[in-house]
Length: 454
Image: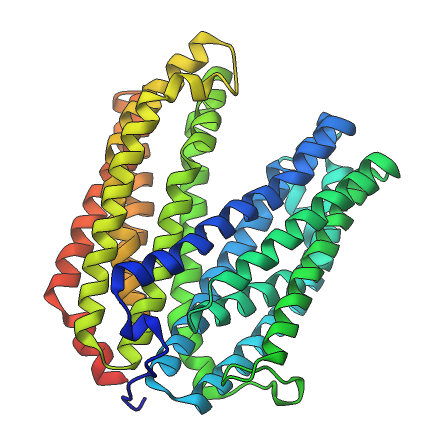
């Protein structure tokens, strides 16, 4: 890749770092919030107007399967975001165009394959996960309709990744806001008005996903910049595809490993009974903002490092990492303290059971003081990935977070079978893995290697 500075109009490689980070960060954070709203609309409406079987059908096993599949592709698409950001920062307009069209071809091909596999294998997968007999028909209907429209999900994710790679985090937010509204309106129309049940909820989701894909495609087609999309130019560029897979595939595997390790922890928590499950579920909802914030910081620093690496602005690479790390640590120290102070009132929104609230506070006192330690993982992994090094962050995260948690569950919990022992797996894995990333980042071998291969 040729080293060439970007234009003065590009704030990511020229502007005040902390200001540009915040300008980029907030739309991503709000977008994640609307994504959560988007994902819960079906559950709220069918739960209220159809019944508990329908509620179980749009969550539970179907949620696990869809999160696993979409999470893998979101990780995979991060490879496209990094490559496009590097080309864009370097002013390589032809490279940007090749990467855009290859990435969109990947989304369409992957989507078609997932549609066929999802529709055919849905009943088997749901049965293998122990879906109850009274839920299985509803769940099968929902997941088949979801997979019928999954190409639109992948196209939106690739398209929004392209826009973020060139510094535009606002329009993906606007698209999510529109589609969240469409989904809720159609849910009410199909489920409440037309009594279409789970099929209506799934159809509403599919239509809203198609709307999001159309919006992002039209935006890219109308662009006068190097990231303009044209159907006739969509093809697989072998060199670009290898680069996208080299960076994105490890991120996709990492997402899958996270899901598997969390599933094992959930199985362990299930053994403590309903009260603990309820407390842990409520805690997951309460601290959801922590992970939304980290996700937004992670996308922001990956884009910043990608563009500045492409422009060979290594001074800004290092300064943006330091600034983003300080911001992430500061925000999450404050947020952890706030959640501890407001924990009981927040838990009371989910339950009136004092024992469940006590258990929830026990969990929160273990994990909340350590939220800030996760910054070393999210920010440094995103930075290293933005420069093009994706395999080593994946290995360190999978070993330090995923494998270490499983080992802890299998060794420490049998010796001290208490809820606190299980929950300690989180802060312990965060601290150890963050230290690994700090050492790896400061040694600088990742940057020398990426510069040598660029």
